[in-house]
Length: 270
Image (tube, rainbow, N blue to C red):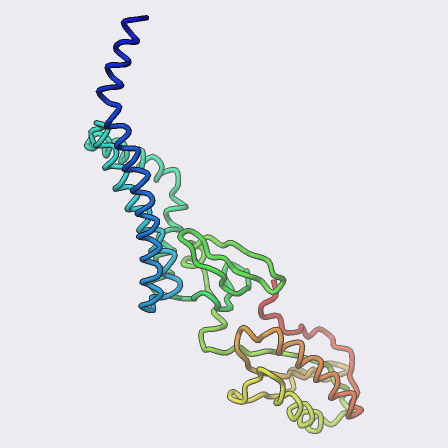
């Protein structure tokens, strides 16, 4: 026991300073890396780097610097980095085989950031889900739906399936429908509705609002009202226009009928 204790003390004297030095370097290195990444974020913001790229590049830089720091600390405590790299490569290969889907999502995230089929704030449909892009991360894209839910979609879905970007033109069309009896004068209804919806907040004058007959049913005519607005104003315009159409029909004593199957505008619904 005494012999082992002496050996332990001897080893402590031999390796102790190096271990303590390595721990100090690790702590200071992590602090410096956090400051560098923070500075990098501020620099990218100042230079107008795309908001979608900033978190991705910051995260990637942090990971690379931390890996280099670990290698440096390993050298200080006497670990041969050549064998360490070989071990890390073998582990990386095994993990890569197990996480092929995640690596695919990472690659897809890079493609999304490079080619920009959508960006943060856009109203999109991906993999059957509709919502506003809340964030584009390394592996996933997060959508915020009209019901205020967060939907997390793997980036591979974005690059492998069809994407509908309702914001790509800078505006979106709001479709509203109601049923009108055949005996009503369509031109009068059309004029009255157009006159009132043009002045609603958020409604574009170009493209101009329009009112048209959508279809003819056995007992009524289905009428469509088509407005354009910013994607972020969609629901405000949708509900304001519905309220205004109802008020306009009532104030002018126009009759409404029961719709036989026209579906109300559903852009953005989940």
